[in-house]
Length: 330
Ligand code: PMP
Image (tube, rainbow, N blue to C red; front, side):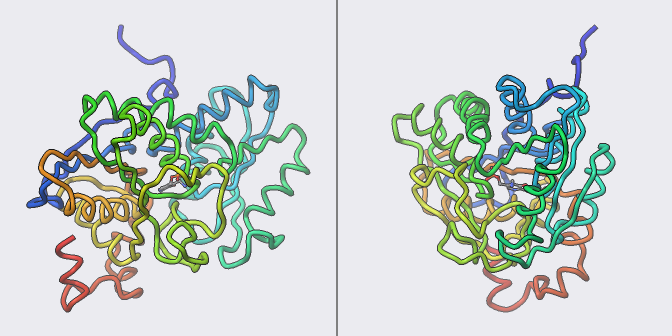
């Protein structure tokens, strides 16, 4: 019989898929690392299992304990998978801009979800950071993984995502492009690839307009899971060679093209990263291999990015005129 003992064993070893349509005509090869193939449907499964393993080892999480985490959803799913298997409870704190679909996914996995306002400062007692801190103090046996400061977040990518890409491309990867949320993906994967290639691989961050990584102040944007209004310690500022700022409009236009032209139903941060990757590929040579990481699937965004009324309400839908023409080219 050939089977896995549990779904946690399915985490990682995700495939690389060439972007044949959206990258058509560009000099470089553009490959996507499709992270929705993880059992929880996102890249965050990788950090969840690594953080829980370390907390058990360090005695921070004990049998019957509760995992409390501020998460936009994907980290919650990863933690919920691992928690089920090992007998922990989960309480997740989300900002209210996170789609109801995503919140319901967490509830379906048996977690409790607490929703907080997006438009308040991190130090505000109503912010999702403050609320999660309060819950950790109040719940007996609570442990907060804190993906923003947990070294096991970037470490999981240094140990899995980076080596996978190096092996899958047989060391031919020249550019790595990823969105930045906590910064774990780009810091861990980027550091591994730089070391493996002796500094040859260029690491490029994609960031929503208004977020701190590209020089903004944290102005609200609609793409989920990326961009910040503060500098998390999980983010290593020395790894990225370049940060490319991407608008919500371009992010969502390319997200829709990935579904329609590549058969990749993915989330908005994937479209954002691909906008940046196409920009990189346009400036690259024929021997270059640009790898872009796609963090999650698109099912959680059907009522937003893939809904024409929602897109039109924010002025994201027009495909004519100068802005639409640019979108068509990226
Ligand atoms: N995209 C999505 C949808 C995410 O949930 C996250 C995680 N916050 C990211 C991108 C960014 O990944 P990281 O936190 O590793 O920077």
